[in-house]
Image (tube, rainbow, N blue to C red; front, top):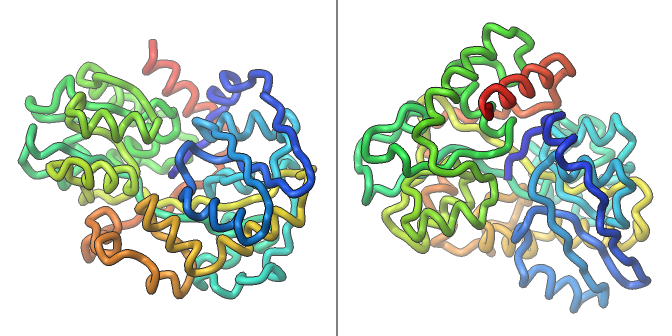
Length: 346
C-alpha cells in the first residue's frame, strides 16, 4: 500500500516500542496489517523450519519511528518506495547484496535498480498498485472518472465518505487533482492543495488509513466512497459487487512497496532466505491472489488465479495515466505538508 512520509506523523509516532524477542530459527517481520498471504508464511515455515513472527505498523511514520528506536529486533520490513532513500540516508537499513540472492533474476527488469534504490543494494520489490478512490454505485451511479467526485462530491455521497488520515497520502491525492507537484516547495501551490482539502472536509464522515477498516466500512454500507488502494478496493468489491474502483482522468497515483532489512537485524541469513522465497513465482502469486496487488516477479502469472488477473483494480484501462511521483521530499516541502495538515485539522 502506498504510504507517504510526514514529520508531523513522526512526532506522533514516537512511542516506546514493544521489543520483539528473537531466537535461532525465527524471522521477525514488520509490515502493514494483513499484508502477507497466510499460505505464503505457512509454506515458508514448512520448507525452512524458520518460525515467522509478524508485527504490524499503521503508517510510514510509525515504521520510521520504530526503526529509529532501534528496529525492535526486526529482520525484515516492508517499506514504500519514497521511504527507501530516507531509511538509507538515516542509516536504518543495511545493504543486502540483492543481486546475489537466488531469484533476483526473476524480478521484472522495470523494477531492478529503480529510482529509489539505483544501486539495487538495499531493497527488492514486494507488490505494487495504485491509490485512487472507490464508490458504492448503489449510492451513486454517476460518472466517477475525476478526482472531483472525491473532493467535491455529489449530494448522494456527501457525509458518506472516508478520507485518508495520513497527511501525505491525502496531500498526494489532492496535489494530483489540482496539478501541483507532490514535493512542491511553493507555498502558493500548497495553498491550492489545502483549499481543496478544506472544501472536502465538511463532507467527510471519517478519516482513516486502515485498509481493513475501510474495506469493512464500504462492505457494510457505513460509507459509500473512500480514498483507497487498488487491492483493498478489489477485496471490498469481491464482498459487495456494487463497489467500483475509479481511474480518474487526471491520473492515478502508482506505488511500489519494497522489502528491506533493518540495520542490526538479528538474523541476516534468515532474512535473505525469506527474500529468496518471495522472489519465486509461486510465492509472488500467493501474495497477488490474496492481496489483489500486482507483483514484480516474472513467471508468476502462471500461478495467479484467472479471476484475479481480470479484476478491475488489477487491470487499469488502456491509456490510464499512472503517476509514480512518490519520493522523499526536501525538508522545505515536508514543512509545507505539515502546515497544510495542521491547518486542515484545526
